[in-house]
Each structure stands twice: as C-alpha cells, then as structure tokens.
Length: 107
Ligand SMILES: [Zn+2]
Image (cartoon, rainbow, N blue to C red; front, side):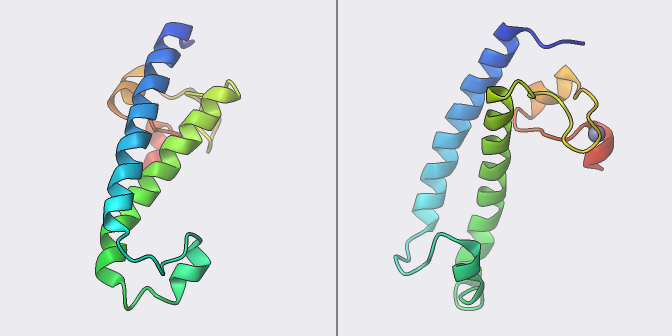
C-alpha cells in the first residue's frame, strides 16, 4: 500500500487544523504565566498545578503526535510505524491522522 500525494495532502491539512486547535486549547488552559514551557521546569510545579497539568497533559501529548506526524510528512515517512517500520493502514490514518504507530504497536 502506498499513500497517494492527495491523501497525504489531505492528512496534512487535517493535522495543521488540529495543531491550531490544540495550540488554542493549551493556551486557554495555560493561564499561569509563571509556568515554564519545558517539562523540566514544570516538574517542580506539578503539585501546585496538578489540576492545570491534568487538563494540559493530554493536549500536549496529542500536539506532540501531530507535530511528529507533520515532521514525518516532511521527511516522506508519513504512514510508516516509528516502532516496527511497517506501513500504518490507511483506515487508521483516516481515523487518527496523528498516528505514528501501527495498530499492532499501539497496543
Ligand atoms: Zn508497528
């Protein structure tokens, strides 16, 4: 199975829209200006900001996947499992454009 350029372009558009959405959501959660951007800085503040962190963490993780997928598109590796190197099924990519693992490796 080879992904067509049209399919990849459509996935890229979805990922970029998703990135904008996640950036906005993270901004709206990030109401504390003293909170650093790096996870090292944040580690010290996890207790105080646990509620905030709990809301932000899945968003940050999702954004990381989206960025990873966009980077994969740039390097022509999109749709290839980063774990085993097998192609990720097109159905899975449609359901989850940010997928960087195949069905087997994701479980
Ligand atoms: Zn895999």
